[in-house]
Image (cartoon, rainbow, N blue to C red; front, side, top):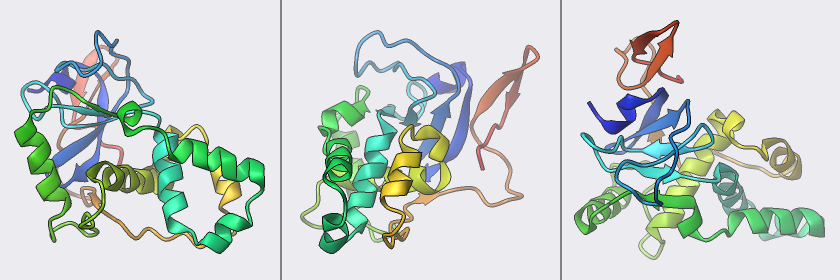
Length: 202
C-alpha cells in the first residue's frame, strides 16, 4: 500500500513505469517536495509516494496544455494570433518548470532512471537528444490533459478558442491507459462510508 492510497484518487494511466493519479481530495502541503506530498484535485501525480515510487506532483495543468499547443503550431499560426492571445499563451507556456514540477524527495538515481525512460525507443515519442527532460514531460502531460482531461484545465475554453483554426495533432501519445475489460489497478474512493478500490478515470 502506498501513500496515495491513504486518500481518494483515481488512476489515469501510465507514463512509462510511472502510474498517473488524480487526487479527489485535498492533502495539505507541509513543505514543498516532502516525501509525503500535498496535492489536491487541481493536480496530477506521477508515482504514489511512500510504499511505491516517490511522487511527482504536477501543478498548473493549464501551463502544460499551453506548452503542448504552442509546440504544435507553425510560426505562421502564431503570427495570426492577436497580441493579447499570444501574450496569454506565452505567459502560460513559459512558467518556470520549478513551479510546475514538484519532485517529492526524488534521488539522483530516480531522476536518472526517468531520463533513461524518457529517451527510450519504447516511448512513442521519445525525448530528443537536445531536449530538456522537463519539457518532454510537460508536453506529454499537456497533450493528455488537452484531449482527455479538459476538466483539469481551467483555461480549456479560452485555449481551445485561440487554437481552433490551427491543425493540432496528438503526436506524442506517451501516456497509456488500461483497455476496456482489463482488471482495475490503483485508485480508491470512499462511497457511503465504504472504501472502494480500483477507481479508474478511463
